[in-house]
Image 1 (tube, rainbow over the protein chains, first blue to last red):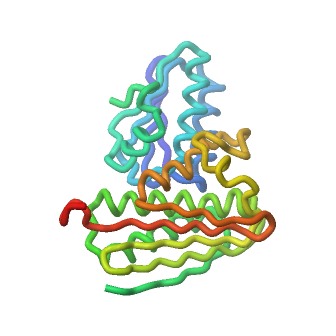
Image 2 (cartoon, helix red, strand yellow):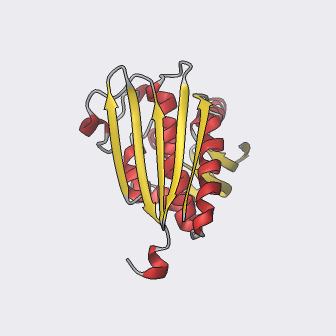
Length: 101
Length: 144
């Protein structure tokens, strides 16, 4: 799992690649949260183009960031989710509250 | 076709990727679709995560995984000798989690149930948990 972040104005773009499970969900969470604390960020875009696998550990991680962005009156978006990731986003109900592209 | 394999590994988070890849590689003998394979890997990941996070609560222990192929059916059994589950119906409820502080989604059993054909949870407090899941491969090919 690798994480690359880029800030464009008040939007943080997080490009994830690899597999997301319990072993790395905590690392992604603290990486994003560090940026949220340091910078005046309002919106968050999670780019899943290179994520080949995600289990429900990723759902917990996304929900946690969703709450933080909501508290800032910002918008969170998930883009380019692959079929396996898309299925779990759908099942979890996250697609009902987050724009998934 | 009848075949089986058995793996044992320590309850370490980094073994989750190994376990789901191994289960997927074994299931490949049944010539599953990409979606069927992804379903198996996701369900196995959830069950192994449960064993590591809840069964052993990050303490050391062993997880055992048995995969079987009986005709067109893939069977996976994931067993730990950890804490066990006191109330199985409650644990299986969507969004229920015993560790809310860690941002767990409580979706593990829901994912297993949705992505596999059958799910059976056998557990006793102090004795451990055994999760058995089955999935018939090629349902689309032959009609269900």
